[in-house]
Image (cartoon, rainbow, N blue to C red):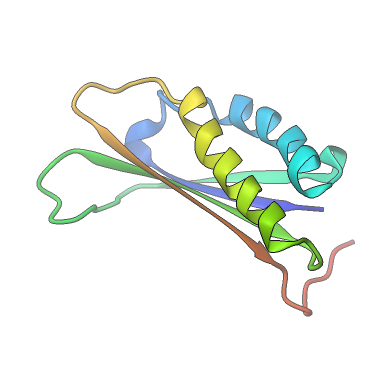
Length: 116
């Protein structure tokens, strides 16, 4: 039941292998935080416009947010965050003149979270 949301700059459309990233990420959740890869859900949100710093250079953003049921140790969540940061570049082709900023966070669902 992990919910993964990936926000990425539109300038990465052709460079970011999104499906490959998701398929590689799901087993990582199993290995790092004990989540069942069969119930991982990843969605990608294309950001038409992103601005980094003063906006004078070509820069792109990839941010991965992973939501989990509460109960994982902080050390396990930190390992998952580091694994995500290492995995993203493996699914990005270089784009001339473009700097890509990659970030990730792992958070617990609030008590109001429900699914069916």
